[in-house]
Image (cartoon, rainbow, N blue to C red; front, top):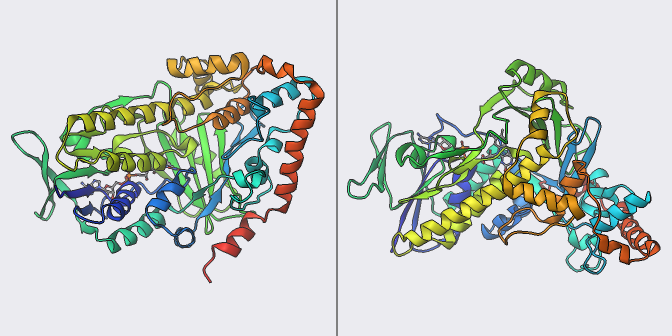
Amino acid sequence: MEFNIVIVGGGTAGWMTAALLSKLFFRGHSVTLVESEEIGTIGVGEATIPGIKDYNRLAGIDLTEMIRATQATFKLGIEFVDWRAPGSSYIHGFGKIGTDLMWLHPHQLWLKLKAMGKARHFDDYALNCLAARQNKFCFPDPRNPGSPIGHIDYAYHFDASLYARFLRSRAEAQGVARIEGRIVAVKQRPEDGFVDHVVLADGRTIAGDLFVDCSGMRALLLGQTLGVGYEDWSRWLLCDRALAVPCERVAPLTPYTRSTAHDAGWQWRIPLQHRTGNGHVYASALIDDDTAARTLIDNLDGRPLGDPRPVSFRPGKRHKAWEKNVVGIGLSSGFLEPLESTSIHLIQTAILRLVALFPGRGFDDADIAEYNRQHHFEFDDVRDFIIAHYKVTQRSGTPFWDHVRTMDVPDSLAERLELFRASARFFVHGKAELFREESWVQVLLGQGMDMTYDPMVDMFPEEDVVEFMNDIAETNAEVAAAMPTHEAFIERHCRAP
Ligand code: FAD
């Protein structure tokens, strides 16, 4: 069965969907995208996580071309400043942390060294973090799996509007038809409520078999038309507003996102080649917009390029991401604050899930149920990781931090924190989990969680543990010293000739 696929919306979600579907479905189905320049896009969303490389590969995107077109930089992780307590800093780096000693993971050995007063800074054992601190970058060398250089992992920062433009040109070249216009009505079939067509302000109609709702927080089809409800998570995630402003870039070009905690939220800093993106994410019930704007501007490291732009949001997820013949991808399906840069990743996994469960012979309830099951798993999983940043902290003295530090968290997270607190042990709950042990370890240690190491470490002589960990740190130091600076790497590999 051939499908007319209609994508409603041309933000990052819409164009990512259009570019990938038109690449993968090279025969049979047609793809049309409707967007409204008058309404515009959310225009933020510039930091990614390593899975984006899989999207690029599948979509046939040439990396150098993308970096040039979107003024992109590389990202080795996120620095969290003042999150544990004012004055603190740690990095959640992508990639491996050292090597295991038999079955024992390096963070266990580090905790033992710490207890002995012989631990170096945790970053010294993780090449991604060490390189980030030194503003160094290079690609991993897969020919060298025995060296930490073989295990560097990275993502990108890019200009959101340039990224959408870049994807649009690819999608259109692959046959996607773009229609400019504002949708004023959505018409359903009387017999089963499936969406039949959308109506534009000028009277044109666009019919389809499958509609992908990428209309952003409006959720025009999934929410407004089909009435799929929204599960609100604001009891755990107090931030509901952001002010975004770019500023002039400053040297050096850091290969990481920075998140700095403030009294009622936090501020992002995303370095791009041509500017730095910044935003203050905050709880609007606890701080007014003027104070939030002043905090943002006072903490820029370059001259602001314009006035702060507000965006309001509600943390949570839709009760279903697929209902009848409508699949919601992007902000229409849910939103979690950008603390770990997960939204673009969730767009990507939603597209791949749609491809894997594509209704080729018609709509089957089993496919739809599985799609929605995975949607819930992913959102709940990311939610827990983000809440953990707030729950595990020593910050106090403002209503915001006093609330999040002492609040009850979802049971799934509470159990995980208890296990980790007992002996720093961590187990993944399923293949689809986005954040692995390395991520949880760095964040929970970085946030200052009080924990003891696995008692099994005591089976090894102390001097062996010291020597083992020293070797890791010394090798990392040598490798990082030989890496080029982030700026030099981009200059050499990614600038236009
Ligand atoms: P939008 O960009 O809002 O696009 C909606 C589209 O629908 C537009 O084209 C609009 O014109 C169209 N549309 C709507 N109504 C109609 C209509 N009636 N007729 C026709 N067209 C219509 N994600 C990350 O991964 N990393 C980050 O660093 C990050 N930072 C963020 C910071 C903030 C403050 C926020 C709020 C989000 C952030 N995100 C981030 C999330 C990211 O911005 C979004 O996931 C991403 O941009 C996708 O948005 P979208 O395409 O779903 O919606």
